[in-house]
Amino acid sequence: MAADSVPGRNNAGFTDQTVRQITHVSIAGKQVRVRLSNAYGTAPLNIGAVHIALQSVAASIAAGSDRALLFNGNRSVTIPAGGLALSDPVDFDVAAFANLAVSVYFPSATGPSTWHQLGVQTAYISTTGDFTASAEMPDGTSATSRFVLASVEVAVASKIDAVVTFGDSITDGYGSTVDANHRWPDFLSQRLNANNGSNGTAVLNQGISGNRLLHDIFGPDASARFDRDVLAQAGVTWVIVLEGINDIGIPGALGRPAEEVSSDEIIVGLQQLIERAREHKILIFGGTLTPFEGTTFPGYYTPAGELKRQAVNAWIRTRADFDAVIDFDQAVRDPTHSTRLLPAYDSGDHLHPNDAGYKAMADTINLELFKAH
Image 1 (cartoon, rainbow, N blue to C red):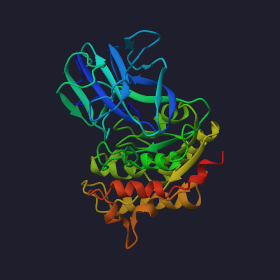
Image 2: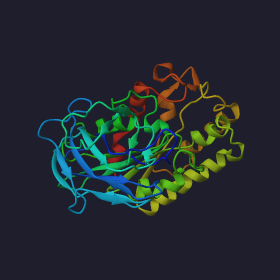
Image 3: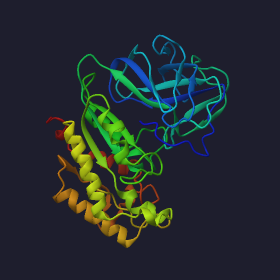
Image 4: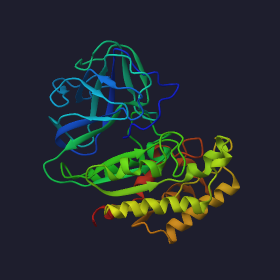
């Protein structure tokens, strides 16, 4: 996951409240730690306490699983504006695909906090008080965003490899069932780790809804965040890139004509990601852009935009310098109308797949790609 969106009008922050967030891990291990982000904060962020536990049901935690997390031996930590805080590792037996509850107490007013707006996972926000160690959360409010929590890291005894899924809302899981972990990176993780026990492959979902290659809007553009979200991640061996459809559609949808780009400009942007991955000996796989004709977002689809998508996909399939091509377009398109999503895979907006569509995307990935490195 990534804490990556600039604070907005729907994110007022917290005061003397606890936020319990559920994360779905991909691998098993014996220790965990968390990374908290104040990347977009304009003032120091005070964290009063952080606990981690196994989720039971909704906001409740499993008996006996709660652990307090420390920061250089301290219960609390202050994160400078723009900074990060990494907790000390704590012994914690975690199984692959476990749901962990991370509870963060904010003792003083945070103001709008760094968040990941499209969490597709319920975050439970308490009434007044520190409930980080409580088995149950008092009735409060909830959200489907992530706040401050940038990552959960699982430590294993032997070296494992990680794959970063790097993209926009289609990688972020827009249109998938909330709390079900049915994004395509989740389905990929299930395939990669089905029989691997503690020697699996970590899957790091670095999708941001609304993300573009060449312009900022909801968080930094793909070029700007590639170092943070890919190159700086521990153990990364592979990255799957699915970026470019928002570069085509957002200028028309949001009335930003000055930000219109050509297919050649998108191709140059993708080529730059290839070069940067190669410098770090990371294998990079290119995903073809999925269909979007008929989308319910006004102004997003145009015939000219479709020609751009076709040009970018042709380059990815035949001329790009990716280490492999993953044909997401072919996996989810309607064979009788190839510029549209297959109805059985359509979330309803004719742009984002549903759970079945995301599973089809994951199923089209050749797992042999993750053996040669």
